[in-house]
Image 1 (cartoon, rainbow, N blue to C red):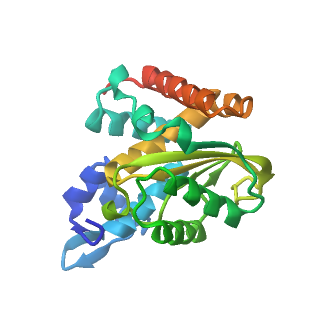
Image 2 (cartoon, one colour):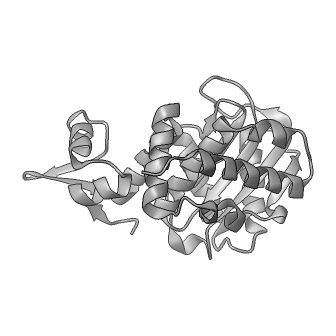
Length: 242
């Protein structure tokens, strides 16, 4: 999958966009693509990297729309559609991290990922996260960062998972508003479609609920997990069906 080449119809389906919208993005040079004769070709890794940055940069309405469409296509919008409970466990939450720099946060989050028992290639994950951060920071306004590897290689993990860290001190992590960061999610998904949906859902949870404020009020990992689950349920209930 990482080296696959999409045609126009395939990339439109992957991104939940109309073919005409993808063609317009290509015409404006906003999406990485190649032209062979009269055809547009899209390399999987380049498109996935572009899509992740696009989701992180969505405004509120665009994020809601993408989350609704990706949910409706790949997930049931009932209460059973919750995915955080299958991706996060209390032991995968570090509520009092002592990291004091961006490099140490990345290192400590990878160490936390390694403790899940689901990470097969620790050094490759670390390298891929560092490469992703060099493109542009995954930090967002509000004091959070949604770390993820640059490339999503299925062999790197035994299963998809998320680890969560909260630092004792605020860390300069490259937020677009230049604010500091103290809450970190590391998203490790085997499937690219799930990765984009998880990314959108976490953005919704962080910006549309009181998730971050509640997380900052406790240093108990089990409490934090329950806060996450309640926040996700709130987002699901607010997401209209197509």
